[in-house]
Length: 118
Length: 118
Image 1 (tube, rainbow over the protein chains, first blue to last red):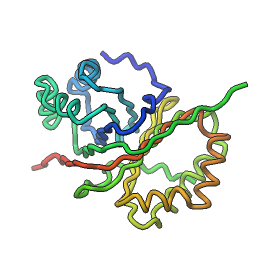
Image 2 (cartoon, each protein chain N blue to C red):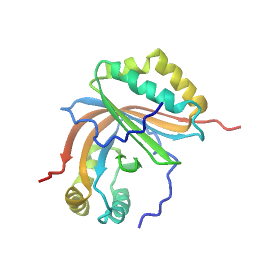
Image 3 (cartoon, rainbow over the protein chains, first blue to last red):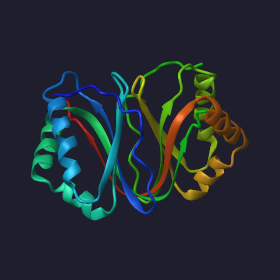
Image 4 (cartoon, each protein chain N blue to C red):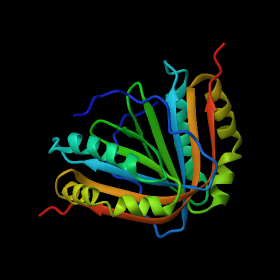
């Protein structure tokens, strides 16, 4: 089950080009097995070659955004076609999501900032 | 000030190509004028030609993700160079953000899903 640790460091910025998959969703009410499957997917995706990490945030009762980063389109395609992921997506459309949007985008520029502490 | 309405519909999916600006951040503690400025920036960006909308989510005490969509790089550049936005970004690095990452990406594929209700 979800361990509810709160991430506080974004995925590290890489030298472009690389790819971002932006998934923005509104959930249905109730869990319907979502948390357990989400945790499982979060582990499985790490096995995909070229997966660089993902960041997630959700407003209670509102939109959630997950951005997954991949080195190349081959990794995105491998994840898209992963059997267990395909099954989870089909289940998700039936049970978890009121609506979502998905954008696959080639990162052309990036930079990071970190506050200096004395 | 912020009106705390909760958005429940992601920015509409467009025909690619278009651009996504992904901003992922960890805030410092306290407001320091953030909410008021964020609301002002949310209004100003709507005046940028080619701005298509933005989605935001934040985990309390954790990461926030904002994804702004633009028709082309010219719109992103116009927003980047906007004087009031530049001032807000400088203030933000001094007061609001522990760290952030920014990715500018060209959307090559997108699709949306909406649950059918009888």
